[in-house]
Amino acid sequence: MAVQVYGCNHIVIEVTDARKAVKFYSDVFGLKMLRGGEGAAWCKLGEHQFMAIFEVDKLQLDRVKHFGLMVRDAAQIKEVRKKLTNKYKLKPASDLRCDFRDPWGNRFQVGDLSDESLVWLLPYQEVQKAGITFTSKSKKEKKS
Image 1: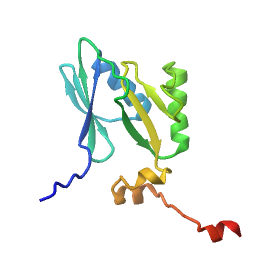
Image 2 (image 1 turned 90 degrees about the vertical axis):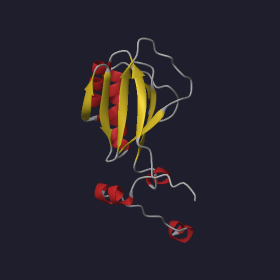
Image 3 (image 1 turned 60 degrees about the horizontal axis):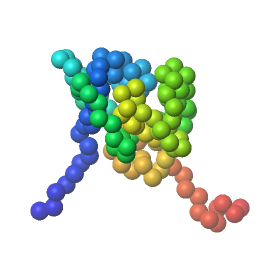
Image 4 (image 1 turned 180 degrees about the vertical axis):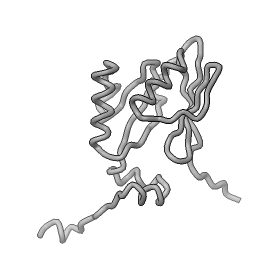
């Protein structure tokens, strides 16, 4: 029998101060706290996933590991970029549209639902609730 994967349940990041990390991610992305305590926190990501934040004594940064978050549209990406650069004084990690390292060195990228190549990964009901529609014009329609 073939294994059926339904999605990603959670991601885990390491920080030196879990309380500050919760404040950061709540401020930038509006993440809701599920529970926490004793150097750990759990924040809701979308409808069915969560991010676990674990406090460690020493961070071990990686060059390529990262996670991606989805926001509604380009305006929200712009809002995130503005807050990260102005309020938190963070610089982009690459030339990508929204690719940063948090204050603890965890790299994250932010995409939006207008990227039709990514939206198919979301449950269709969530796409409908968000009111996202795609119209694809044929080559013939584009010429007229």
